[in-house]
Each structure stands twice: as structure tokens, then as C-alpha cells.
Amino acid sequence: MKRVFLQPRLRNREVRVAAAREQDMAPMGVSVSRGRVAICILLATGLVYYLHSRFGGSAPGGGEISVDLRQLLALSIKAAEEGGRAVKAVKDSASLNERSKGKTKEGAEEMVTTGDLLSHGKMTSLFSNTFPNIKVISEEHDNSKVDKSLVWNNEIPNLIQESIGNARMVSEESITVWIDPLDATQEYTDNLSHFVTTMVCVAVDGIPVIGVIHKPFSKYTAWAMVDGASNIHPRKSYNEKTPTVIVSRSHAGAVKPYSKGAFGNDTTIISAGGSGYKVLSLLDTGEAKQPDRADLYIHVTFIKKWDICAGNAILKALGGQMTTIEGDVIDYRDSPSNNGGLVATIGMDHHALLKRLSNLKNLALKK
Image (tube, rainbow, N blue to C red; front, side, top):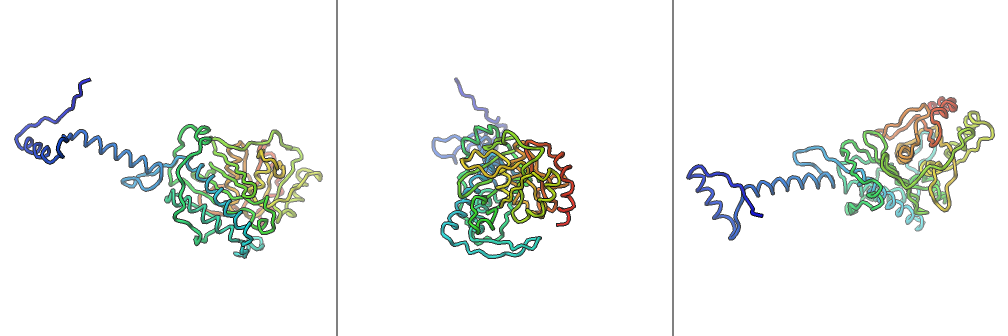
């Protein structure tokens, strides 16, 4: 096929002279084509936009940056597992260096260990080094363990690519990442390691859309994306009439009388540590050693959003719900505090259960 190159028509002597000079300045054997230069510039500009949208950063001209949610899912899994390795390594070395960082709203000592801090450093580093413009909120604030050299390789596992075929682009400005580097610190120090998890949640415009819960001591990881895919499933059935209720170990006494009043004296109450563990108890994890099996998760006191966001996202992705005791949707944009308690269900009529638990509203509001 004959190639045809369109050249601009030279209309006067000055233009011909300029063209001749341009030709003379080109390297030997190379003919300069203005059309080709223009195409190269367009391709280069497109490449810059692509790289910025894929790997983060500021777009040329300060435009909006978009990120693929599949990348954030893969990075969330990586971060939770890296944090889990740190948590386990510290526990194995018996160098917890446990200390109090203050008191909870209820007056209990809030503990922190080297495991919390080392996990926090690894998990937050992976996000801040990969997507520096995305807002990350972690339970811990000590950045002495942050590792600037720790980066993600940008590889999306085949399972995620096959399960979620198309890119899911969202604006960086709309994203908030919630990190719990060590859920159930008290149980961690008490050698109740089966309650311990590391968690990552990605919220878009305050709505949880990606949740990852990792168990460091069994190396089990649950993940789910809303309108995407998951590696965990609901159980086949739930007891809505007389549900087994799972509650916090430290607040079980406050919940028991209300739960039994709502569902009867034969209601089974399970006391457990860690919000991540409690959410997993509602699901079929597929583990050889399944966590406690509960039908309903209730919390009546103050709780932080890094404790519950990942579980909220997973339940939402599987058709379940997590709300305050009043039935309000929990917003995950900014403030870390959730003052309205929570009720988490799946496979049941959530709002009907809230009506049966109406006496819990006053209890939650007092805390």
C-alpha cells in the first residue's frame, strides 16, 4: 500500500526558507514531519494521563485523578496481610511492650503494643507510598514505624481480575481508607489470638465499598467489594426468631438483658473480642475451624469506625446490613466516632429486628 503523508502547503518564500532550515537541523537521514511531532505530543500527553490515573499523582493542569477500585482491593488485601505478619512476628518474639494510651469513653484502659504500631507503619506506608493523595485514617497515629521504601508492585491478582472484569474508576477525592492495624488488642495481650484481626476498608463518598479482614494467626483473609466480588459467603440459614447474639466481651452485661427481653430467655449470647471477628461469625468463612456462629451482632456503646468499616463493607457486598441501633446508615467520610451503637445482620429482616430491639436505643444513647 502506498503511504501518503500530508504536508502543509508552502505559500511564500519565508515559509520555504524556514522549512529548509528545519530540514538542515534534523539528524542525517531523518525527515522531520510536523504531523508526526503533533501525534507524538498527543500520545505522550495521553500516556501521562493514563499513568497518573493508574498509579496516582497530580494530573497535568491539576485535573481530577481517578483510581481503579480493583487496585484498591488488591492493595487492601496486601496491606492487611503485611500488617498481620507484623502482628504475629511481634507476638512470637514476646516483645509486645504493652502500655496504656489512655482510657476509652467508658473508662477502660485502651492498650497499645509494638504489634499495633509496627502493623500501622506497614499498612499506612503501602497506601501513602502508592496513592499519596488518598485520605488514610488509622487507629494509631505514631508514624515512627512508617517505611517510605515499602511499596506495592501494582499487581492485581488473577482472581480479582477474573471476578471483576471491568475497571471501576472513582475519584481520589471521594476516597477514605480506614485502617485498623490490630483489632482486639486486649485479647492479643491475653493470648486470645483467634479474636485478633487486621482490617482495611475503602469508602467512597462515605459509603463502604471494599472490606478486608485478615486473621494473622490462621493466615485467613476475607474480602469483598460491593457490586464486585468476594471470597466469603453468607451461611445457608439464620435463626431470626431466636437468634444467637454476639456481643463485646467488655460490654456483654449491658446487652444481655435487652437481648433476652427482645428474643426470649433461651436466647444464646456469645461474648467475643474484636469487631472483625464478630462480623466473620455471621458468615461462612470456609475455614477448617469456623469462628463462633452467630445470627446477630449487637454493640451498644461508643465504637470507632476503623473497627467496623471493613465488616460493614463485607456485609453490604453480601446483601447484609450494618446500621446504628436507630437504623441510621453510618457515614465513613471523616469523623472516626460512631456514637449510636450498631446492629449487624445478614439473611434476615434487619428493620424488623431493630423494632424488637427498640429498648436498646435508650441504652446506646446514654453511653
